[in-house]
Image 1 (cartoon, rainbow, N blue to C red):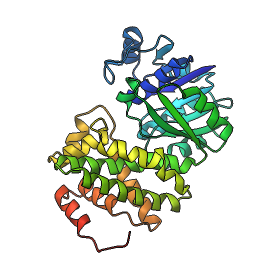
Image 2: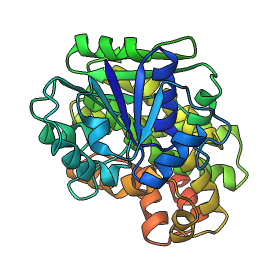
Image 3: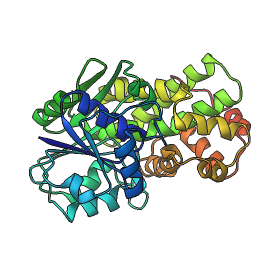
Image 4: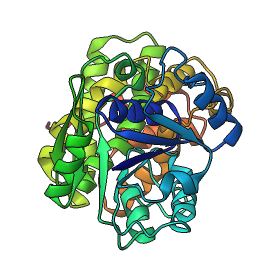
Length: 330
């Protein structure tokens, strides 16, 4: 059984390592052929995880055709803005009729505002199954084999359990779900809330502020998810509150780190220009705001975040306006 991971960033590399540790032969695709060759030869993805030595069962390639053809599982871990393009390229080599597709990307398509599973379903209508993985999964910790849990959501429980078996081991524990929309939405919106968590840290605020943000951010996420047809329980599990805790508070989260930089006075352009990693929360915020308005869902944290990111509002002014809102019942 051939398993392929499409995308050789930090998370894609770690997922390939998990699969290889579980006894699978894994093909890892890197967009840049020269980079793929360097990683294959050195057995190290120095740009993202310089301390991780790749498992011998991982083959790194710059050929998307080589990675995609005849794979039983295709794991997509490319930035959200590139998912549609990469999926179309893969479709040029295979219709994935016998393939399970798993997206581990936490974001929206920028042009259509669709979720990643929607993109895959449109591109591969005959795929064996389409699933999403999301949870409190900081790549650097999992690369060190620290214990972590996640959620794999698929409408077909049989295929969710199949993927669970592929990934589950002594340091990585996936749970199954059929709530694809809920699990994927959690992964998108938590990145936005994590930006605010970083802002609070950047201003020197403590645990009370973070706890308040996580709790009220969860309320906003749940309200939106229920309007979109998700299951309420999903938001109180690993994909929801679990991922919020990890990304709102950890300096290993790129969204949290971006929020810290914003609080310290850096602009969005300066932050995005200083890293080769994609800060999905910045891209997702206007989409979440638009969804909230379209479905008449009150999301004041998202609204203030949007004002900071795209209307040059000061972080301190945004937090002040959140705290001065009309008194409400919880």
